[in-house]
Length: 313
DNA sequence: TGCCAGGCCCTCTTTAGGGCCTT
Image (cartoon, rainbow, N blue to C red; front, side):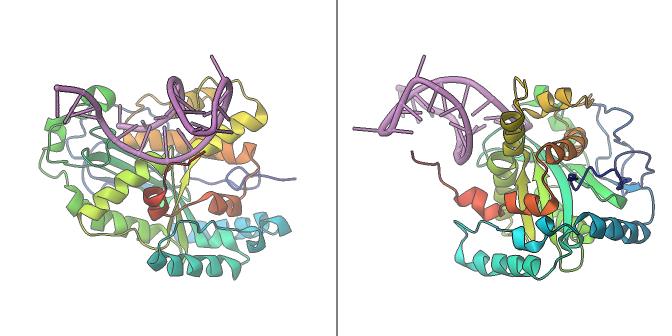
């Protein structure tokens, strides 16, 4: 029997419901069960506490994962990470990751899966800016989610899309990107396993979220940490639709949510979309019979998304 | 003056073009 790493009957991840929350700052709480509001948070900087102590949970999780990934097909031998287009400085680091994976049969214990989403002032990675981010570590535990508005220091022309207004992001306490990056790095670092890798998952990550994030980091002379890998769920959804012959009119996040009966009352708010994708991802990996080693295989570096060129045919 | 995002995928294609997906 084959199961997705996120959808195993034996494995109950206490990540997506029934959690209390810890707020670093702010009063607005987002959750999967209670729906989401487009109203201003007023104090936009929020982290959550979710359920149990993470150490205890990790212990159980590790045991479960050891059971899940005991199958030969899920060992590191199956991992074949594509290094095409990787710049030389990154290549050495990337080889280190490959070596690390190859030397560890217990791959799952090395990988932290974080679903993320951004809201922006528009589609141009060059001229537009990020105005909201949301992150969720699917392992759950304390402070497993991270979300905040971001002050882009400019007018927001597309409030009709996400409900985020210029006034909202100009409030005191809303960080600018330069202030947020160190905190974001610290958040991800706090979630990863020692010497582990992080899979950051987003819908249309390759051509939207990752390039946007990359350019924002570049503006502040910051590079993605070498242990960050990205996964785009758009091609996964495309593959599911193709291989299973699903009658999906679209593979947008909204359409996928509808298809899998996932309620999202605040689409186009970062954390609401993160929560939706957090529920869609297990469905996709299950349908594709994709273990975590498969997700690693599907992953790419941030620099790959920037350096890739349009295919010539 | 005109443009104003860009990469992937599909097909009525491959020496191309249009739709999709993200905000």
